[in-house]
Length: 164
Image (cartoon, rainbow, N blue to C red; front, side):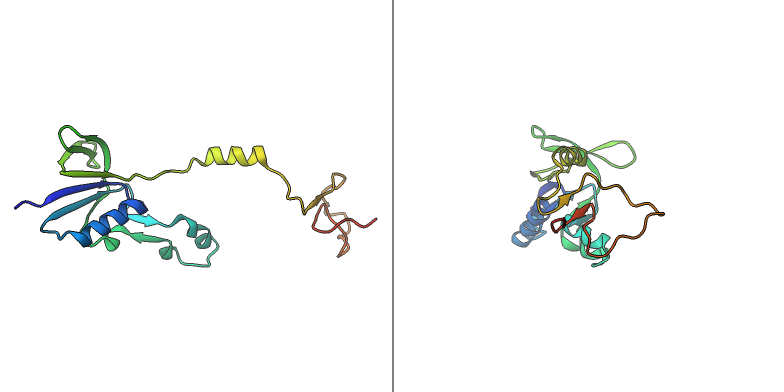
């Protein structure tokens, strides 16, 4: 008997967990699982700041999909169309031609992408100085010819009240 083919579109947490769980429940002789993701690795984005700060290695924040998903076919081609009527997906094979692949079941778990332009605009619009920090509008930046500030005296941004 021919195994059923399950195509998973996406390579994020939901897609990877689904493919991993399905592989545990159904052996390869009963179910062929193909995962399509643009990347060949899964990145845990909250750890990227730690990678940039060198507190952890980059390999701690990313894992190759093929290592995470033994028994699952991992493809990096980009899915262009999903036809529910003919039960086929069309994907770009990397050389500019579209290929078709029949499936028995399809799971779409593409996830989300952050649009940082919107986030930056929102930050600029709602930016404010925290209430525990005082701002001195009379402050001008110290130039090289200015004497160094006296330690313990308030500067332009201080976390203690200015002394009269």
